[in-house]
Image (cartoon, rainbow, N blue to C red; front, side, top):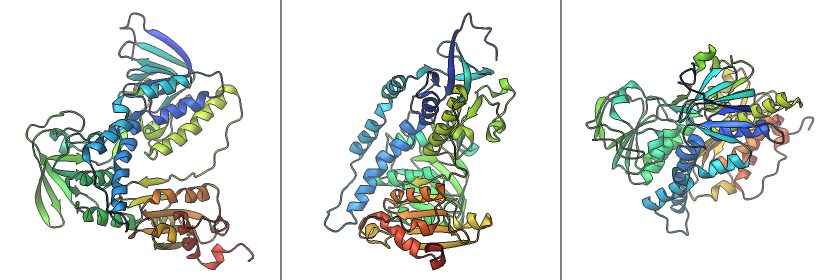
Length: 482
């Protein structure tokens, strides 16, 4: 792309350029420059703080936590229960997303010594980036450029003309529809179904697969499906959408109903069917946001990013990299890459990074699903001889005390030869608080005969680890030579 059409674009020189100002980009810039004389420019065309802060993790959890708490009060003797107040819940969401104002994020970035530039960025040469709007600026980096542009929803052609809700609309809900169809059975779908049902919407999920939360242990999807159905959500598995129609389809604004009633033609276990609803949420996955980034100006393609085929000065991190699309994983990778950039620029030794760092994940459904490492099936496919310990979630006093019906399942997968933990999955109330010990054990290569000496407090939820470890064969859980 040429800049000849501009009279005299401003030229800014810095050490590191970060394209994308979400939490991943912010971490990359911070770690690339901290405790040094290095400078960084963050370029963001929307809100500094990114998808997570305004349209994903933060707003969804602000609504899910009160829902979870209300459900808990309905399952604890001694409490009369709590009810969800829609206006108060949405006001809480608005407070947490700063009413979609990123002034606080900008103040943080500038306080950390980072320069923020607004506009759309394109790569135009080696270590050169053009910001075309609102005024042309060329930013040149002495050392590195980091792509941290995040991801965007995948919208199948079936839904393009019906102005469906996407993830931003459902986290930014303003008009609460009486009826909602959700297409998809992944994390966005089940979390959205949880809070929309709590807001009083009649929700129907259309899921192509034979269960929810594909890729997790099968019992996780079964527990979540049962809980959603108990909350009034209809879950149609092995159901595909054949066609979708809507009169007056129009993008009426974030979280507003986008036109007339939606008609969906489906093909499922019982044959063809027609479903109607006030709104439809398409939650069929996300893809890296790399379009119009100027990769072609460098002779690169999106495939090169996924394959890691980038020049040594150019890095992709977070959702844009094609790695696991989770904020905490992107931030971790940004810290690692940022530190590597800093070391290369200053000549200091590089950080030693463990191999095969696992990615933990928590699905904030009710019950929660928390997992890290390999599932049992994945471990066997990888050639491990495995031992599995599986128990009901309420197998300890600590987890039983969370609710009077603390239903769910806990499971660990262990290598039968080395005794190393390969994976763990917890499904139950507040399960997300139990997964970090498993992550630490995998990263630290702690065998289970050592892990059993990490004594949990009684009666905390972490006590569940004791019966899980005791469910393994004696030869694995006792110290070598005992």
